[in-house]
Image (cartoon, rainbow, N blue to C red; front, side):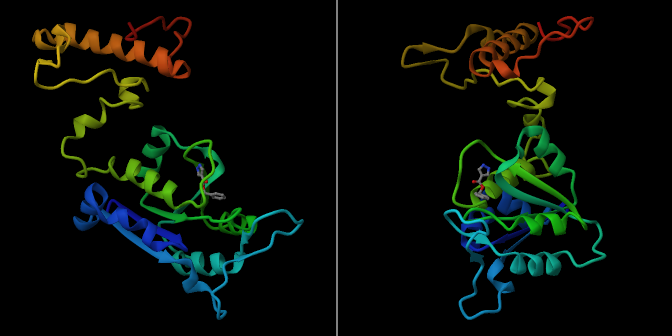
Length: 246
Ligand SMILES: O=C(OCc1ccccc1)c1cn[nH]c1
């Protein structure tokens, strides 16, 4: 497989959507080797306890280190090659962007640790970091109850970049945030009919003048990016001028 992904969670059913559609097909065709594991497999008490009260007080519960240590030890036994990257979704992580998706898509093996409650005992990441790269990743500045939804987001963004997953790979280079698109947002798109409820498709798109169409699309992308995400608009670098940006 191009990518092996292990997901550890106390809610394995939450990851069921990964068996559908695009990601499901990638798993069926062997491009993706996906395994979802229930963290409670690595508990030994009658109540299969995975959490406890936080040292130092405070509200909420913290996920205990022992089950995680055993789970990661079972999934990544010492000497495992290639060494996987441990991805831990958390609001306290580095921002997940298309560039990070591209980076993760180049990895042969990803292990996802889904946190719940107030998070996972910090020693789990510290201990794992002695054997593998630990990547704490945020999919946005908001708080979820657990990392599972974030894993669905990250895996969808990553798996669709793997060769053979999406029908037309060219569609991957023309979309918002694609590096080939200078990280700009995609402008408006249209299909038939040429007039719908009195709204016309911009005539340039029906002109067959591919130069004009390319310039119009670029202009629309810059305009939309400046309006919606001014932080993404590239500033001309001294000496680089506006090459290719006009
Ligand atoms: O809530 C998130 O992850 C679940 C989580 C993990 C650890 C402690 C609390 C919550 C999240 C938000 N943006 N990106 C990830």
